Image 1 (tube, helix red, strand yellow):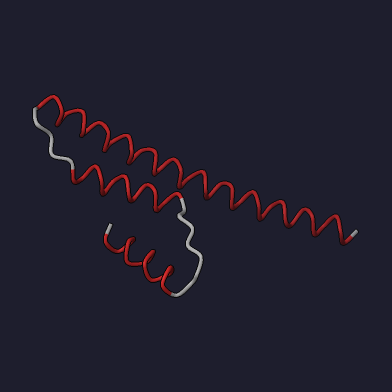
Image 2 (cartoon, helix red, strand yellow; image 1 turned 120 degrees about the vertical axis):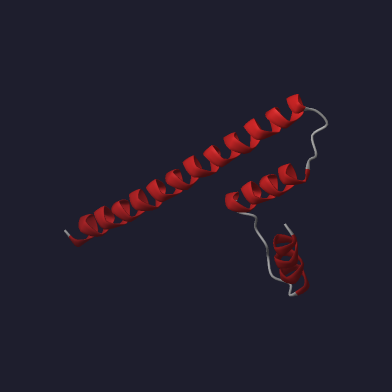
Length: 85
């Protein structure tokens, strides 16, 4: 999380725009969850489930991003073919 804060601070000081991408949000949530100290075994179990679900969401999101990128490339090729005709 410190590295993310350092990047944000640097961008602000340099006057550059900073936009958080989804991966930054996932990382922030993982960092915050990692800092939580459960008070009971029940809370510990719940926290473990949250970590597991977040990891799965991150994986699914990454796959969706790859699919969108591939589809955008295919669309670009199709548009180039239509323009070339």
